[in-house]
Amino acid sequence: MPMVKFEINSEKEYEYHQLFCNTLGFEGMSIFSFTPIKNKSRITKKIAGFWDDDDKELIKKIESEWKLIEKDYFKLFEKITGTPWLYKTYHAYFLAFSSMIGFSNPFNLRSQEIALTTGAIINPKFLVGHELFHSHYYYVVDKMKMTARLNKTIFTEGVAALALFKTKAKSLFPGTDTESSVNSYPEVRAKWPILLDYWQKRLSFEDFLIKIAQDSRF
Picture 1 (cartoon, rainbow, N blue to C red):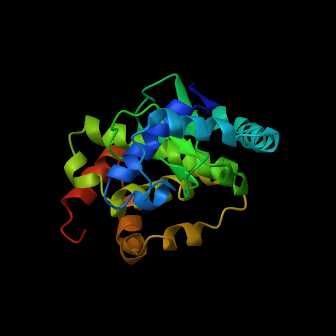
Picture 2 (cartoon, rainbow, N blue to C red):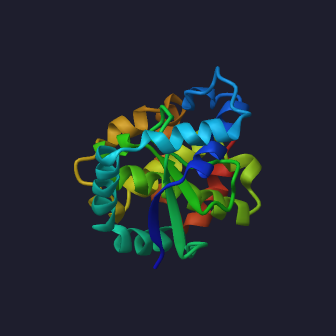
Picture 3 (cartoon, helix red, strand yellow):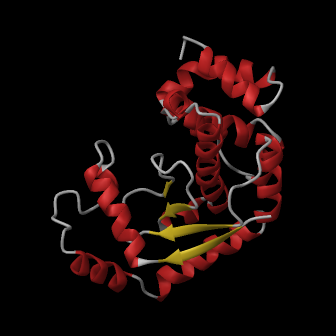
């Protein structure tokens, strides 16, 4: 089964800030949104200087919480989706200068990584699991050649909520407020009964994706 490596990497964080600053709708995820970032050495130096022992201790706690469910998580979601994970190792990169808590790049359809901040300490198991599912979902949908239709918030977040909360996987995330997670996205909340009905009647994960992709109500 795959594993997750938790890492601080200034070069990788710089790449994320480039993505955030240059993508409409993502600007708020970088504190450099209104600051030039072309001087790479300047930004990476700031990033490297951010991390102290207290920050690193938080990352260790997040990692230790995740490791409690890691094997069960990867095994279970391979079964739920009917698709083996693409990589043996996934990378969780911690960002110093971002307002988000967790992120999986929707433009990288075969991603081997997710991004987190130390804010993930509020619910490490769920937040790591949620972002990893997104990375796996992008791969499955890409493999089915349905990215243009299914790589939209209503589907990416709706399917994630179904897979994490409406399967045996829910037991991996005790104490997680499932209603709050669904309600975080108005478009998901509005169509939740339709998504749930398709989910309960699915013949397989791919069958479910095909059915929701064909429904004009989405």
